Amino acid sequence: MENQNLSSYYRCPSNIALVKYWGKKNGAAQIPANPSISINLSDLYAETKVTIQHGNVSGLPAFSFLLDGQSKNSFHSKIETFFKRIWQEFEVVRNFHLHIESRNNFPHGTGIASSAAGFGALALCICDLEQQVTGKVFPNFEQEASKIARLGSGSACRSILPNLVEWGEHSEVSNSSNLHAIEILKPEKGNGFPLMDIVLIVDAGEKKVSSSEGHSLLDANPYSEVRYEVAVKNITNLIHAIRRDNMRSIISIVESEALQLHAMMMVSSPYYMLFRPNTVAIIEKVWEFREKSSLPVMFTLDAGANVHLLFPELYRTQIVNFIETELLPFCQNGLYFCSATGAAPVKLN
Ligand code: PMV
Image (tube, rainbow, N blue to C red):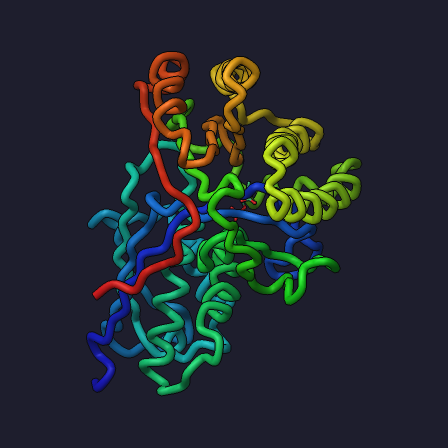
């Protein structure tokens, strides 16, 4: 078979949202209820290689999946759903058995979400293989990859683009779309950017509630419409604050967004709480340190207990010193990861 052993190999970073995506539009495939903004975590990434093994006439997606060299059944159904969603448009998925090998450069089971990086890398490989197999050329390759990455995991669509990234229709963001993410701004040096992100590992355990369940609880949450409106305003305000170099305003939007994400979990039915006592202890320490030092350091949270500390690269020495002297006791096994932000995915050989 002529296409046998064709392959594609990509590195794709994970991302962290500054304005959160939490809630999907009813009845649509992975359409966000509100727009979001994120930055990629350049040093925390997935590397994925997809190889065409042989033909597939089963009429169903056919693939094998290895994570760090080991077969991982728990990911099977998410990948299968992804392939079913792109089945009509992608010949490479319809006609071939695909072998997927993936690895993350951060240890598994640290509570760092890997699905954005993983589906980002997989989407890039699939788009590349589709071009190789059919000879077609996607006029906007990144946009196509972002579109399908969204169908694997919503937030994955943002990992495909560099710098400041936006996903979801917004009247004041030109070219914004619910279907794919766009790069909106390359913040100037001196605008507080580039930021560093240090992820403090508070709880390395598996998430107690999957993000799909979390999103769906917003449908019946009495506060959700208000939350969506606030997110829209925060997009406008965050873009203005970054353009005007207003660090005080950037900090207040980013921290408020993190707390709103968790507040929405606490007012869902059933309600739940993903942060831990050490999450709160770290946040209080950060507020105290910022007050005393006047350094522009802020926290954000993902759907878990870990804390992301964001700060301009310029202050790295002082912030690492603060973490090592005051925050390590709150981290599980003293674990944290340090990353630059804003990188684009890379095609590997
Ligand atoms: O991509 P999903 O469906 O796993 O959603 C994740 C959403 C958050 O990470 C909690 C927030 C965000 O905008 O990334």
